[in-house]
Image (cartoon, rainbow, N blue to C red):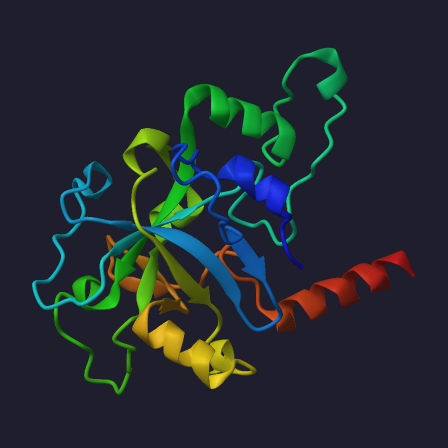
Length: 231
């Protein structure tokens, strides 16, 4: 299941004319074992990081920003609705899940919505728990606050930032299952993985929200319950 290229272009920050002809990867690509997000790399002095914990000096990973598609909610499993009955009236509806009307709102305000991803070493303040928990060097934690309530991001503050790839899943093992050796190498050398959310206030782990990754086991269970209900 993939969001269409034409739809994604409306969710992406507008490119300048010099790079407009360069093809871009889909903002979000959903498969059974992993969800691949194209994200923005935030430099340490970026205004979006004001109030966030300062990155550990020896942390090899930067803060990242994952962009929401217009019409997505924290619990979105499927792409948002494309067609709105209000389109022919010239008015905008108030449905949070409407792609068309929310795309227009974001275009008019020149903003997009985003979730912050925290590098694990910085989140753990340079230390690791003694209970045997193991983190990948390129592992990110999804900030739970902005996973549920995304921040509004001025497009002008991110249009020229470097794009990176983050693989979301239930575990690193499941994320890599079925990938080629080259794809796994790319993930370790150039990309990142994320398997959990992170509550900054309590420093406790949280499950990933559905829009970041929805486990295949839960999706199958949801379909089964829907089928039972129809019976």
